[in-house]
Image (cartoon, rainbow, N blue to C red; front, top):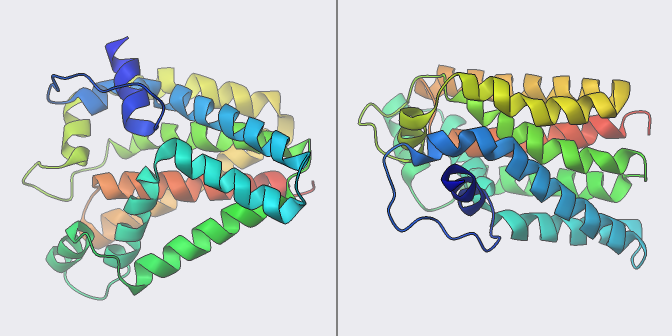
Length: 243
């Protein structure tokens, strides 16, 4: 249960305190639970969406639901998204891109990326129907599973520091199989729409990882964050097709 507690403590703002003693590789060992944590986030967010539909018009419902979603995660992955937009999209050397991604200040690309992703999420949430709203369950669970195959990529920073390095030290390949159970079951339960949305999400993750590999030679903790945010948006949008 230590690993589940770590996964909840890392991925959410729920009252699960991280262990006082942190062992190297703990974030990687906890990764097998990431899809379950994503399902918890999705379930709480879906309840917020459902409740908001009884009170507000669709646009306000979308924004309120997004606020709850961000509050549940503490905006953890949005920070990675902004850093990646600044670094990966910069026309400069690999070393400079990594420096930009490490800089705590957000640049123009980061701001634009954040605005676009948040706008797409809010409008997607506002456009959901009762049937398509279950995409809220799949999006965060699948997105966090996509972190696992990302752990197979080389680290962009050879120094071996940061969350990406800690993840790599504890991660094991079988985690991908066990972790896939929850998002796979959710996708199957929602039929063709669920399967196509899952495929679209995995494809989006592959594109982000390809971009990271080509621009900085591998992955970092920020890349994991970008994967999560992009996959969540793509799954929500895919669930809206034909809704």
